[in-house]
Length: 103
Image (cartoon, rainbow, N blue to C red; front, top):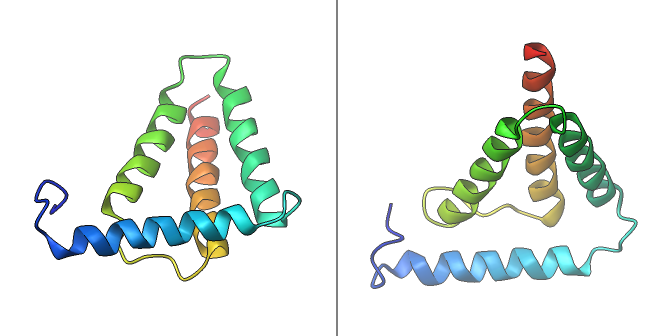
Protein backbone atom coordinates (compact mmCIF):
# COMPACT_ATOMS: atom_id res chain seq x y z
CA UNK A 1 0.00 0.00 0.00
CA UNK A 2 1.13 3.55 -0.61
CA UNK A 3 0.23 4.95 2.80
CA UNK A 4 3.88 4.85 3.91
CA UNK A 5 5.03 7.12 1.05
CA UNK A 6 4.20 10.74 1.87
CA UNK A 7 5.01 11.77 -1.72
CA UNK A 8 2.35 9.50 -3.20
CA UNK A 9 -0.25 11.77 -4.88
CA UNK A 10 -3.00 9.35 -3.82
CA UNK A 11 -2.42 10.39 -0.20
CA UNK A 12 -3.97 13.81 -0.79
CA UNK A 13 -6.86 12.28 -2.75
CA UNK A 14 -7.45 9.74 0.03
CA UNK A 15 -7.44 12.42 2.72
CA UNK A 16 -9.87 14.55 0.71
CA UNK A 17 -12.16 11.56 0.18
CA UNK A 18 -12.13 10.78 3.92
CA UNK A 19 -12.88 14.40 4.86
CA UNK A 20 -15.68 14.54 2.26
CA UNK A 21 -17.15 11.33 3.71
CA UNK A 22 -16.89 12.73 7.24
CA UNK A 23 -18.70 15.91 6.13
CA UNK A 24 -21.46 13.85 4.51
CA UNK A 25 -21.87 11.77 7.67
CA UNK A 26 -21.96 14.87 9.89
CA UNK A 27 -24.74 16.34 7.76
CA UNK A 28 -27.00 13.34 8.30
CA UNK A 29 -29.79 13.91 10.82
CA UNK A 30 -29.49 11.92 14.04
CA UNK A 31 -32.64 9.98 13.12
CA UNK A 32 -31.35 8.99 9.64
CA UNK A 33 -32.56 5.40 9.08
CA UNK A 34 -29.22 3.88 8.00
CA UNK A 35 -27.30 5.66 10.74
CA UNK A 36 -29.76 4.46 13.40
CA UNK A 37 -29.66 0.94 11.99
CA UNK A 38 -25.85 0.86 12.10
CA UNK A 39 -25.88 2.10 15.70
CA UNK A 40 -28.44 -0.57 16.66
CA UNK A 41 -26.47 -3.33 14.92
CA UNK A 42 -23.19 -2.26 16.54
CA UNK A 43 -25.00 -2.22 19.91
CA UNK A 44 -26.33 -5.73 19.23
CA UNK A 45 -22.82 -6.88 18.39
CA UNK A 46 -21.47 -5.40 21.62
CA UNK A 47 -24.26 -7.09 23.64
CA UNK A 48 -23.58 -10.47 22.03
CA UNK A 49 -19.93 -10.20 22.89
CA UNK A 50 -20.42 -9.54 26.58
CA UNK A 51 -20.72 -13.30 27.03
CA UNK A 52 -17.20 -13.93 25.68
CA UNK A 53 -14.04 -12.07 24.86
CA UNK A 54 -14.63 -9.54 22.08
CA UNK A 55 -12.91 -11.35 19.21
CA UNK A 56 -15.72 -10.76 16.66
CA UNK A 57 -15.99 -7.10 17.67
CA UNK A 58 -12.21 -6.80 17.34
CA UNK A 59 -12.38 -8.29 13.82
CA UNK A 60 -15.09 -5.78 12.86
CA UNK A 61 -12.98 -2.92 14.23
CA UNK A 62 -9.90 -4.15 12.34
CA UNK A 63 -11.89 -4.52 9.10
CA UNK A 64 -13.20 -0.97 9.48
CA UNK A 65 -9.70 0.39 10.17
CA UNK A 66 -8.25 -1.47 7.17
CA UNK A 67 -11.03 -0.08 4.97
CA UNK A 68 -10.35 3.49 6.07
CA UNK A 69 -6.60 3.09 5.54
CA UNK A 70 -7.20 1.84 2.00
CA UNK A 71 -9.87 4.47 1.24
CA UNK A 72 -8.79 6.29 -1.90
CA UNK A 73 -5.74 4.04 -2.37
CA UNK A 74 -6.70 0.41 -2.89
CA UNK A 75 -10.41 1.05 -2.49
CA UNK A 76 -12.46 3.59 -4.37
CA UNK A 77 -14.31 6.15 -2.24
CA UNK A 78 -17.98 5.51 -1.55
CA UNK A 79 -20.37 7.43 -3.76
CA UNK A 80 -22.38 8.61 -0.75
CA UNK A 81 -22.68 8.42 3.01
CA UNK A 82 -25.52 5.92 2.54
CA UNK A 83 -23.24 3.62 0.54
CA UNK A 84 -20.64 3.81 3.32
CA UNK A 85 -23.26 3.08 6.00
CA UNK A 86 -24.57 0.12 3.99
CA UNK A 87 -21.06 -1.30 3.77
CA UNK A 88 -20.53 -0.90 7.52
CA UNK A 89 -23.91 -2.50 8.22
CA UNK A 90 -23.04 -5.45 6.00
CA UNK A 91 -19.83 -6.00 7.99
CA UNK A 92 -21.67 -5.82 11.32
CA UNK A 93 -24.36 -8.22 10.08
CA UNK A 94 -21.71 -10.63 8.81
CA UNK A 95 -19.86 -10.52 12.13
CA UNK A 96 -23.07 -11.10 14.11
CA UNK A 97 -24.01 -14.03 11.86
CA UNK A 98 -20.57 -15.62 12.21
CA UNK A 99 -20.72 -15.21 15.98
CA UNK A 100 -24.18 -16.80 16.21
CA UNK A 101 -23.08 -19.75 14.08
CA UNK A 102 -20.26 -20.48 16.51
CA UNK A 103 -22.32 -20.18 19.67
